[in-house]
Image (cartoon, rainbow, N blue to C red; front, side, top):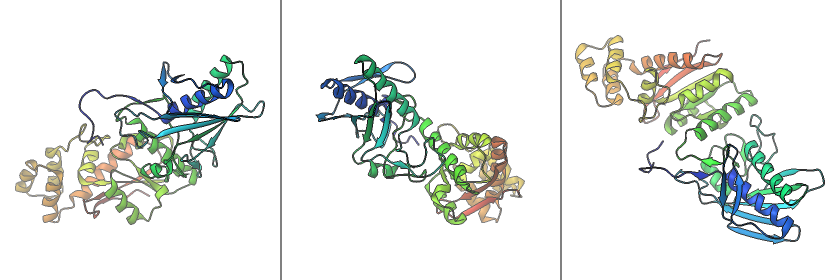
Length: 364
């Protein structure tokens, strides 16, 4: 997950929501006064503020457009360097702030997200941030704050192909995101958030079977093996704990956990975060498991000295021992204890070629 993480202290950045807020505040002030503030300062949801420069400032008859270049700091954010553009126009009296999707902003097409179907994919937290910034400008200049806000990110539809928006039913572009306004480099929060939204969509669609995979190979394999649609796939990565804990209060009928042998060994050994920075395969415990299914003493000793889980799996397979099935069964036990809900769980273990090598079926 963090193979390209830079060394040393990491620089924070600003969310698309923070950039849109700054652009909206600048555009509204220009609409009222004829002058754009540049740079523009806006308050952040959890205290403090940020000051961002404008990349564009255009005032025409009845409309003002401001743009801010997103700086995501040292985070590998797909929208880093993109321009977030807001066009402001006066709305009808009493209308407050209304939101519209411009170029590159997606539209919600499936239930289960925190926005109704048909709404522009501008999340609730950025909407509230924008409303507060608009109100601050309105108070400063004794205005009503009735404004139509259209947000655009040129090239956003192409950028969205690198996100999970398609699976979540957000079509036509990106989402405007950010609960704090701040991008914390290499944060787990955004990934876990997307897993939770995927579960919400699956529940809203009434899906009977969902799969969560640790990587692309296992995802493609479980999709093919189980005949699942993209909306039934969760890009879980290493965040097994973040997935299972959400299912405690948001259960699904059936969850398939799919992953490579080493990842599933770590889960079987009780790890709920599977990244190599936090968990390792315990070769002694894996050798003991091999012994429990009938391996001879010399094979067990060889397994204890192995460098990788794949080596141990190859040893087991050379003697016809179903080690991956035993790993899957142990992993399923750990997952069931963590989920602690009505969700039924099965585990599938795949090799690097996508071949099913281990399986623990769900109880009926």
